[in-house]
Every structure is written in structure tokens, then in C-alpha cells.
Length: 634
Image (cartoon, rainbow, N blue to C red; front, side):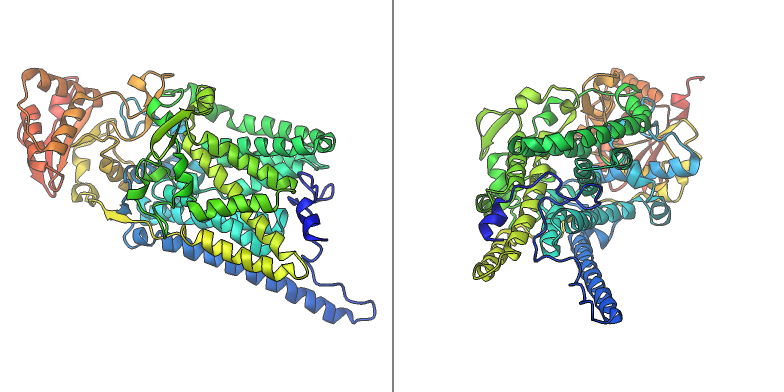
């Protein structure tokens, strides 16, 4: 096969023989063998069997080396947190790790105490939090229960981040090498970028649910299998099980996968309409089985999410407007070898949402791959899919270096059901996967060439990969220290104050910018309740309203947050005192706690003393026993 023929091969969506377990994006080249040549009939069978065994063992060793490389890279990225999981957190943002640790502790209560998994009153008491609408990662937290019990939620958090990075890369390597490109070096390159792209490194700061994408390649594979399946009922049922588990990891990523597959299959169909005649029956039957089975299993959890207590519809305008700057696609990500946090200001909503950031070199290489292999149906389909979602990721207003240019197409889609809860910048994650598969495609295409072009193509491909991937090579996440859990909590001294259905109120009150009390509660497996916290809930606590961060507005919460940030002690009047007591009664507060090492602790102590009287020091905190003040019977 000539190079032109290799590039121009017209290929189906799933080119494996009918009923095969292997699905390729294009036909495996004749020089790529999965087994050694068959022995001649006259050759002794025993030596031939030994050669086959050695061949298989060699492939397994290659796989083990690749998996080990992914694991070491993930440990390298998270090494700063592993040095002290309880005392360190990624420096870019610290609120979400505390929230995830709270969810991990909730999984412990689900397993050990049979607590309702989809709703909790352990924070934002008494309104509670709809956990189905807050990505409670039950499919990750429940398997991690032994680790959480033995070592605490902080260790479980960094373990999930590490496994999320290497597990995603390993899963893509498995599917690419066995079913899609069926070429190990190419699969390793594509899988590397799937697991360690700048977008994945950015979310590794605080989103283990987003980087845990190890089921996605198997979902993609099973959908492609359905296009040529002779057992669509069985294959649809297998797909449904994957969908259900992924729904309890992250529903947004599951939606992205479905959208990306839809756009990709349409892009193939437009080019090869005759393929639809053979694909629509098994694909339709399998997807119908998947929808019925997954729908039955997810019906009640989804009802809780969309119609249960504290359900919300859509996100606030601030989050829905999160979009990438066009320049973000040619800048290196902050947590990479060539990255610069200062240079990336205003190119992404924040440092945890750098969902593009390929750098100039990789962007040019991706374009070059598409031009080189432009005659291939799959390359064109992948390019169309990546470009489509790259445009959507720009958000409602398209900008270049923070200068607004035009209104984006996302403006037309943002209010549609389901899409109204999507953060548009994250569509860049789909583009990252399409770029990764294009890289795998290019490596495989260069390695199968013959003749004088073979050496040149391999050399240019290797040089291009180094040129493109070195500037965005992963670096250890930058970390910062965080206050330890007070001894008052770890020594269980709080138990003499807080009873069932009572709360421990921290100063400042738990909120998006003050999540340390969530870590306190998580360290006790949520043995006590807290008011407020960091979560998504309907505006003003009214079920069905648009979502916002945090529960109902708290006057005293805002007052104490202002004191904590400014250090100024306000002069309070009787009206403010009555308001604070009303809120304490609403929360059924038992004790108010202020750590001695809290920022501006002295102004905070004086402020609270104006409201409820003198404090008493106990171990490393100031304590106000407010049970008599909040006792409704009294």
C-alpha cells in the first residue's frame, strides 16, 4: 500500500468484521502484526508455540512499561500534595478539595450507616444539599471507603487525583492499542495526551471527578461496536452499565461524550452515506436497549437531581459565561513545563478551567496532521469534531487576548435543557481528546510507510512530537499549606456540646471562600452538622430556581466574612444582635467556634462577643456555648 493509498483509504465507522470484539478507526496496516508469522507446516509445533508465547509476553511487558510510566507521571504531578496530604493543597484554588473530602466522608456514612446517598443535611443545615445535583462522586467515593477510613479523606483525595490521571491514560492506551488504532507506540502517544493534557493538569488541582475519565474510552469503543454488532441487545446492555457508573462519577463528562460521539458519527455519515444502511439497525437497537436499561437504573437518582429537595435548574449567568479565549489554544497551560500563570490571565475563567492551552507548537502540529492525512475519512471526522467543540468552548462572547470580537454560537444553545447546566469552556476537553487521537493516527501512519519515505516520516514525526509536547509536559502541581484541623475537633471535645440535629458554627461561617469547617467535619466522618458550606443550590433556597454557589444569604455570615478579610471590628446594634440570634436558632446552633490561628482572629472574637457574650478558650479555639440562647423550648 502506497502512502497516498494509506492516507486516502475510505473506512467505515467501525471496520472490524461483523460480530468482532475489535473495532478500528481504519484497517490495520499489513505490516502491523498482532501475532508472529505462522510456522511452516514442516516446522516443529513446539518451537512455534514458544515463539508465540514469547511474542505475547513481549507485548505484555511493553504494556506494563507504558502503564508504569503513566503511574510515575501521575505521582510526579501530585508529588507536592503526597508529601503532606492533610496539610497541603494545590495552590491555585483550595475550596473544591474540601468539598470533595466532604463527599468522600459522606460515602463512608452511606456504606457504614446506610445514609441516604443522594441528599444530606450534614451541611447547609437545616435546608440540606442535593448531592445528585452536586457531583457527589459516589462511584469513586464508595470504592475509596477503606482508604478514607484508614488514612482520612485528604489521602483519599490525592489518591483519586493520581489514579484519575494515570487511569485515564491507561484506559485510552488499552482501547487505542487493542481496538481503535491497534499500534502500541501510537496508542501510547495518544493516551499520554488524553491523561496528561494541560486541561487534565488544570482540573487535577481540584476536580478528581472530571479527570477520572477511565470509563470514557470504553464507552466510545462500545458505541462503535454497536455500529456493526450482531448482538445489539447484549452490547447495548454493556454500554448501559458503563453509562450508569459514569453518571455517578460525573454527568457533565458523560454528556460531553455523548455529544462528541454524535457529532463524530454525523461527520462520518456525511462523507460515507452508504454506511448508514448497515449501521442504523444495530446502532438504533443497541442505543434503545442502553436508554431503557440505564434510564430504569438512573430514574430515581435523576428525579432527585431535577425534582427533589434543593434541586435547581441551570447555572448562574457568571458560570454559564465561562468561555475560552481564542488565544488560549496557542498558549501553554499554567501547570506545564513552558507554562506561565501570569501570561494566562484572562485567557480562561480561572486557573482550574484551562481547558485548551495546547501551545503554538501542538496547534500547528495538529493542523499539519489534518493536512497530511486529509484524504482519510476518520481524520476529517475527528478534525470536524474537535473544531466544532473548540468553537463552542469559546462561550457566548468570542474574544482574542481578552478583547471581545463577536457573539458565539453558544449563545443559541445556552438555554436548552441540560446544556443550561454546562460550563462551556469544558467543551475544550473534547477537543483535547480529538487532538490526542490525531496524534496517535499520525504516529501509526508514519510507522506503516514503506520505502525511502519510512525513515524520513518517522524522524519528522518523532521531532514533531518532541517539539509539540515538550512545552506542555506536566509539572508538579504547585501547592500551599492549609490550617490543620483544630485539636478541639480531633480530640472530640466538640462532642460535649453538639447533640443530634444541632450544629457547630465556625467563625467565619462556612461558605465558598471558607471551606475549612467542611474539612473539620470530614475528618470526623461528618459526625456533626454545619450550617452553610460550598455547594450548588437553588437561589434563595427555593427548589427549581437557577443554581448559585451556597445556600440562603446569611447576614451574619457576610458580616463575619467582611471582618475576616478587613480586620475591622464593627460597632453592632440591637437589631444586628437579634438577627444573629435568629440565624443561630434557625441553624439550631449548639456551639460557636473560632480557631486561635484564624486570620484576624482578634477582631472576629470581639465581633462575636458583641453578639453572644464573652468567649472561653478551649485547647486551640475560642468557644461560645449558645445552647441556652438557641433552645426554642426556653
